[in-house]
Length: 85
Image (cartoon, rainbow, N blue to C red; front, side):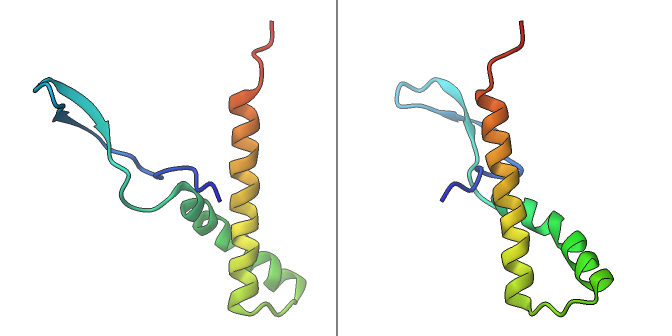
């Protein structure tokens, strides 16, 4: 499953095998998918409360990650879209 890469990548300089400094991207930390899911949480909770629906923790998490997956998929479509002429 694609996770969108790091949510907050950091670029740092490192030496390659030839001793030249090259930029590298840190892959540690929260994934973009997890960050999107966390950002969806307040809306999912508010929707459940407003609708008077009971949602257990597992269902809340599932809904948040469904939103995150939809956001990642939409971002992929946008990246691959042809520019308008």
